Amino acid sequence: MSWGTELWDQYDNLEKHTQKGIDFCEKVTHFYKERCAIENEYASKLKKLVKNYQPKKKEEDDYVFTCTKGFLDMLKELHDSAGQHEVIAENIQSNIIKDLSNLIQELKQERKKHLQDCVRLQQQMRNSVELLDRSKRKYEKAFGDAERAKDAYKRADDDINLSRAEVEKHKNISLNKTQHCDECKNEYAAQLMQTNNTQKEHYTVSMPQAFQQLQDMDERRIVRIGEFIKATAEIERNVVPIINTCIDGVLKAGEAVDPAQDSKIVIDKYKSGFQIPTDIPFEDLRSGGSSQDLHRENSTPSRQFNHSSAGKGTTTNKSKKRTGIFGLFSVSKKEDFSDLPPNQRKKRLLGKIESINRDITRETAEREGLLKMKQVYNDNNALGDPASLDKKIEENAVKLDSLQQEMRKFEAYLADAEGRGDAQKRHSFSDDSMSHSTSDGSVKGRSSAPGTPNTQSHYEHIKEGGDAVDKGSSHPEIQYVDHDSFEEVDDQFPVIGTARALYSFEPTTDSSVHIDEFEDVLVIETDQGDGWTRVRKANDDEGFVPTSYIEIHLYDQDQV
Image 1 (cartoon, rainbow, N blue to C red):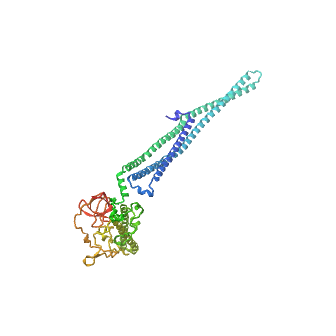
Image 2 (image 1 turned 60 degrees about the horizontal axis):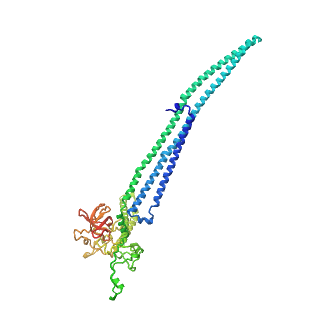
Image 3 (image 1 turned 180 degrees about the vertical axis):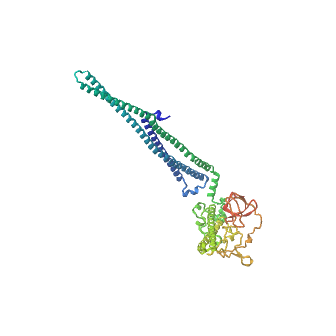
């Protein structure tokens, strides 16, 4: 149906309708702008909420449980979900609001043009009608004049008192008026025909075309509104999979909560390692001994912790001085964590050893790179001066020496914490296997991972009778024994437990063995304080692996 044929006489209503259509577009634009503001505000408040419930620095130790980790995972997924609301607002702003604004401007300009055309056509029709009215009035006036002149002529012709000349005069006037009346009549008839033609063209061609253009404009507006509504749905549909993924992540976080694991973490976190107190002995005062003597006799020779002050870093034996292996290192309570309960002290020491291990690995890799670069410079002097690397190589060697000493010191602390003063006996020769480098990059001894059971000979037998001294050792008073003494006296060690690999490990020496992540192995020799455990694989291969790389279950304990 066409506005031009059905609404040919409704120009005023069509003008109002098209204006309402543009007003509606502006209303839709305001809606989308407000929605964008709400989406952004919602996302901002969600992100602020997530930020407010992130653990503070002092609370990080409390977020090691599965329930707290699950809560943090939920916050992370909520943060990602909030980001999708920002995506919705951004897409609405760029894909809908911008296009709507452009559409409104186009509609306003197009409507103005079409209405101006309609006004021009209507003005032409009014001009034609006015010409017709003027020609009609002129014809009416001429007709009246002709009739009056005709009547005057008849009266003069009938009047016998008038002369012939006067009668002729009235006759001529009558003829002139009649002739003028005929001319006006013909002019009126022509104008009428022209006006009728103009009116017909106006109402059947010109105005229908203008109204049809208005109709096309309005229908295009309606189509675009529908497209914007569908685009809104598409924008939301695009983020639904991501939001669903976030919801799945929240569900997975909830399913990962494990009360048994949390209970185990509580045990690991707070277990002191103290033995359960024995029965309080009966004090027979008649025996002549004082209660203090009886208490001293029934006390264990090991160092005693005051349970009430263990957390404050005080011990009952204040005068006792602890030393590292070989008596080389002084001990600070703060440094060796001796103010902590045994289990907690071991955990802190193991963490410190792990950190030093990482530093040694990094420095070793840097050293290898420097040596390779120096070799390249030696081969081709055009690439650089080899001497320019001597200072860096020397600094690297100093760092490695310092780290190795630090490693030996904390291994001694760990051995002391486990009550083994001879923890380094099996692999003592690895203590001074650090590479000592000169400024030219030469290596006196290859280094291995700290505590690695190294079977390579880093010492020379220079005395009769088998006395051995490490020529590269910085501590000549330290005595080393022949590595033949480390050969196993029995091919098969007894199995004392099982272990599962937490990480993959590549052997660094002949005495270490490769393990894959999650591989199950047998434990045949526990860690002696050097950070290494001897295991046997399913194919009967035996060797040492880092203790921190495996989870051990001994047969005589729950877990170490």
